Image (cartoon, rainbow, N blue to C red; front, top):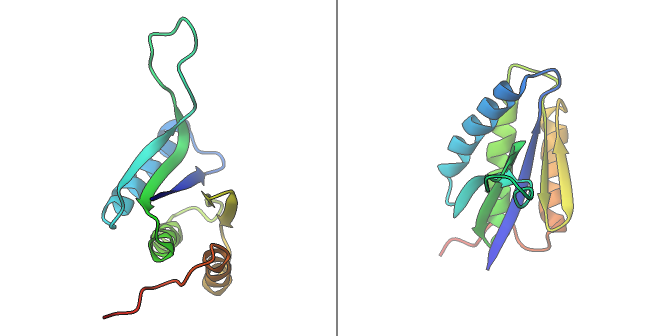
Length: 132
């Protein structure tokens, strides 16, 4: 079974090209994890009469992983790390899994860690497999 995480990037005042570049940078980092795929979120089917090109939602990524809460935690940790290295204090991210959302922004590391821990707990499974 596959679990999908939708990640939406918000950069107030940024032009679309910059948001697209930021999303591409984040995508490259996420692809280094044990994920099945990371792709732009598509808005929906092409409009009637169009040439069939799907339009991606600006700054949004869809991460597909094996159904594992610890992988969700790993993806969220990577996103937090990426966000903390950003040059903009107004940059934020929204992560949605199974209808539950987590928003990360300029909160302190401790505040973000508490939010992440509660978010992962809400998914209802242990965070890490026991090493064997």
